[in-house]
Amino acid sequence: MRGCAGKTNALPVPFTAATIHREANVRPDRLARIVDGLGRIGGRVVFPAHPRTRATLGELGELPANIEVLSPLGYLDMAALVSQARVLVTDSGGLQKEAYWYGVPCVTARPSTEWVDTVELGANVLVDDDPQQLAAAVASARMPEERPALYGDGHAAERVAASLAAHG
Image 1: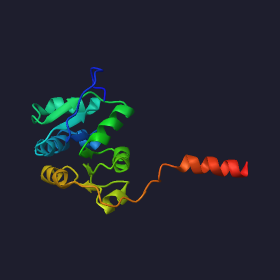
Image 2: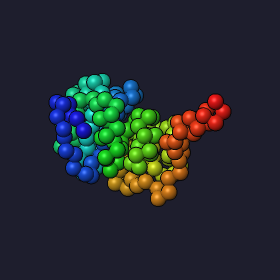
Image 3: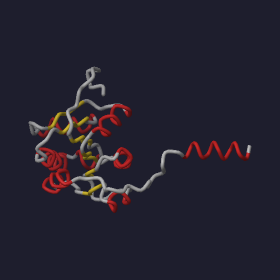
């Protein structure tokens, strides 16, 4: 993975990946509660921060020692980070879904989600901004033994090409 300075970083496993960027969550009161929860995790938290999030983090003062704030990552670097994490803490709808594809349990810092299937399966836990619930959810986060292909199996393009060839 490429870090903010453009050099390769070795990330010891396990670590928690975190990304918080939604406007509601970067208000100082909510972000302070989320950061409190991340600080209670007790392990390394790698947190690529959106510029808006980084500005509010600066207003909060000193962060818990286990949180490593990085500059924002591009899509591929973020995908690499999340796919190697033990758990993801996020408010991103897209990353909730991608975490499922990667086999990484997710803790969502929102009161609701578009991806209710992941919550129903136990692959994703909604904690809103409660610090105690966030830390507890990270500690107990596990992927279910059986993971149905909720969002496809990755072979749709092959089936479309075969169908076009057969009817072309």
